[in-house]
Length: 177
Image (cartoon, rainbow, N blue to C red; front, side):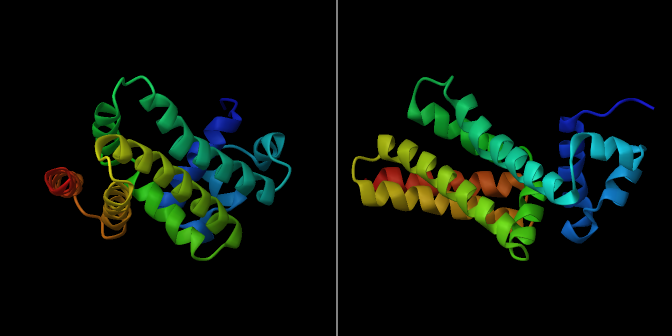
């Protein structure tokens, strides 16, 4: 039996949440999925609550902060926005939807989700303001792009359809401004 890392537990937690829902995110389910004993779990986490806290931190870092840091390698706001919109339709749809569903049931998760949404929106508004001089339309464009992202997840819209909506929003705002 291979030794599991803290990261492997957190990655499995994200997968389990997406596949089974928050109610099934238990130590028994996780150890069963990973083929290890509870001792392996407790080697990394003092309790289920500690695991949840680590999972939320992991999600925030992986789902928001690391993407923004990754985008720093692109030189212009337009390139950053283009790549960001590609990334949002390339992965994590089920995981995002599962975290949002969990946030409806759990105040701790809701607080993290709200913080992630705020961080993402600030970043997106910054990119849009670099493309559109007037702050209000730029902010509206950012909000519409983000709402399209979230709404697309919730109704399981095909990524290509979300990408087409993104392009239409950008086209309309750039033409109007």
